[in-house]
Each structure stands twice: as C-alpha cells, then as structure tokens.
Image (cartoon, rainbow, N blue to C red):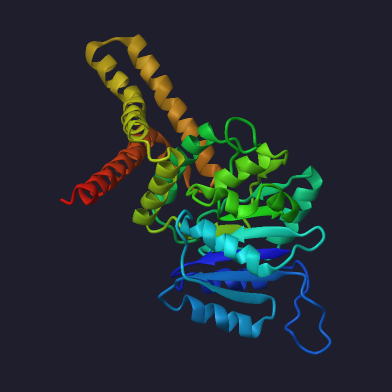
Length: 346
C-alpha cells in the first residue's frame, strides 16, 4: 500500500494527517531499526512548493518513521493543475508498482482513523472495486459550512455524478481515494488527467470508462476533514469545484445559479402568495415543495454527519448555494476580462 499526500502550505494540518496515517493498524510498523521487516505501508508526502513549515514538519515524521518519505516539487509545469501534478510526482517517487499494490490519495487536511485502511481494503475486495472514495466528515469544531452549504452541495454533485459509477460521471471526493495500482496504470495515471481541476470525479469516471468498478463508501466515523472550514474556505472550495465541473462555462454558471435560486424560493413564495390570496391549492403545492426540500436537506446532512436542524430553512440555504454558482460566474468573467486586457495591452 502506498499513500500519496499532496501538500502545499499545509503546516497547520499536515502533522495531524501524518499522525493518523502512521497510526493505521494496516501493515508493518517498523521504524527502520536493525532486523525490521520492509514496511508494507509507504507514505509519500509531496511538498509542493510550500513556503511555510510544511516540509520541516514532514521531515520530522520521516526521521521518526522509515515509512514516511518527503519529495519536494516546485509546482506544476504548463498544462498541469497543481494538485494533479503533485499526486503524479508522488506516484513516480514511490517507484515501480508492487504485485497487487493499492494507491491511497489523501488530502493533507484529512485525518484517518486507525482502522480506515484495513476497512477500505476489505470493502474493496468484498465488492471487487477498483476505486473507492471515502468522503470526510466534519471535525468536532466545524464551521457553518457543514449545516448550511454541505446538504445543497452534495445534492447538486449527486445529480451530476453517481456514487455507484453509473450516469454520465462517476462520483468521488478527493479527501480519500483508494485505487488499484494496476487500474491507475491502465488509465494512463495522472498524466492522462493533467489539466483537470475536478480531479476526483475525473479519475473515478476514467476508471469506470476503462472497465473498472467505482464505489463511494460511508466512512465518516474514520475520516474527518477540516478542508471546508472556516465558512469562507468552504464557499471557495465549492466554487472551485463547480467552476471546474462546468469547465468555466459562464452561461451554465449564471443559468444554474439563477435557476437554482428561483427554484429554491419558489415553494415559500407560493405559500406566501397562496395565503395572501386565499388560494389553498397554491398553499398546498408550495408546502409540498418546501417539505420536499427539507427532507432532502435532512437526508444529505445525515450522510455527511452534519446537523439537519436547518431543514426548515432549506429553501434559503439552497438559494444561498445558488450564490456560489453566481460567484463562480463572477470569477470566470473577471478572469476573461483580465485575459482580454493583457491581450489588448490595457
């Protein structure tokens, strides 16, 4: 098993991530002493051009545990997205594949419980999966991202990517992705996805399209992530995902954002209008839509271990999420104007 951790300026979280990986009950725990067996778990951390203490912290772990290796990268070359290139560098640094090897890609802001690797491998073997994704749950102290943005975000992602690999895209979340090395090589590795920014869904879809079986598992009791905190970071993270998922399409982002907001507030608006004009049918229709949004909020919040207490406000939180799409459109428009400005010399 080889674990790849891409890390750029992750000094605040990388220590907890590596402690969690080193505490896994999977494989050998040798420390490089005399007579020790070759570790069956390798942890490759790619220090991707960090300017903080990330490299220093990782080197301390490497000095204490022979399973940990740190590789320095100075960022992606032209045509590569940063995280994809860092993961590519990590796999290359791990060396030639071993028989039956698995790769685990873990974000630096993610902490794994001690049984996670063993459980993931057992599940993969049981269902004969080639790729498993384990989304992370919230840390003990988390921001409003989880109850406010996460339910609507998960619903929108699920509408476009299937957790069981069906549909136009296969679903995965990059916090924690387990992949057979043989299938990684089969799809051409990260090189085949060099420019992708929604790399998790891209690699799951590529594995599926090359005949592999993909699955998403509920392992929040063993996987937590701080990558959605604080709230501003959660907003930015979702914005990046949807800009990447729409390939920066301004019409899709604008239309999706405005449409999502309109549909979200239609139910309470119908209730208010029906009460005002004493039209019980309109009130009933609006109430039904309101209840449906609340039920979907509860279901998705529970999946991600977020409190579902905001379910009655689901139309408002859903409308707020539409604002993320509009913010993505604003960012795309700004980039387009900047590019035009450079081109014309303004």
